[in-house]
Length: 94
Image (cartoon, rainbow, N blue to C red; front, side):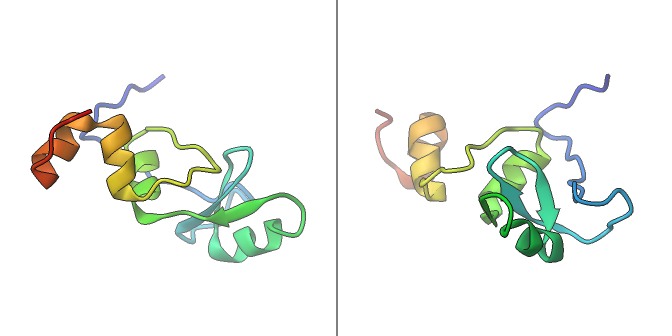
């Protein structure tokens, strides 16, 4: 099994069809990712929503996100990466 560092980026693929080459834009409540066409189709069966830009970057870096996250990027940094938040926004970490 390959290991990823934080600098390596993995390509996200649509989980609906193995031969779909469209870029990933959606995620369902179980963590499967879809292109726009398949994501819209999937919304009829299970909860499925569009990925935010920072969520897509996090998944590409082999990170994880919550389906029902209500965090904006700034809130996400403040909660999960307080040092980075302090560096970017000149604030004291919590």
